[in-house]
Length: 216
Image 1 (cartoon, rainbow, N blue to C red):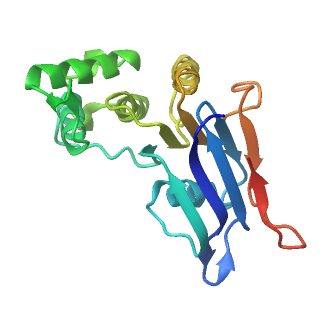
Image 2: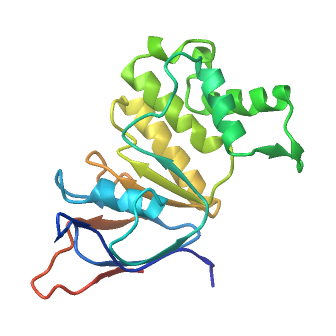
């Protein structure tokens, strides 16, 4: 039986004393993926931030493996180049090569490989301030590939991407899950056919009985 990498028990979050999405229990194992959908304000971003540890639940408990979180904001430093941004992120993650601190050359190789995977290696020396919205998004998503993390938490990862880039990102998500990772994706763009093996969770979860919704 696969190891449970994320578990949430009766989790809810209140804003102004009102529940945002209801009560949720969640249990995911290696290889699982979940697509979150719902209208604006239904709680998709709130749930992603709860799972990432950015917000604390009002009720319930969350246990999860180490994660990568990519939110609405790209989190890149405008004055730096794309490569410098990825170097900095790699440094923050405490990345190492073969158990030892990575050299500058090793770090650059990792960064360029990640950029290449998102088709933005040619932008490595460009300042972030010079990039288009789509280029910014792909540069931000490249950070997922820098250091291994079992859990990917992605909030609207396809915004500002063209069809080819969306298909590329879908391929990377599938590969991550096939290699034993987990992906939780909040998205307006995804249909059930895009990730057919994924579970689909539509927010909000409120019900007349107020019972918890279970996703196992």
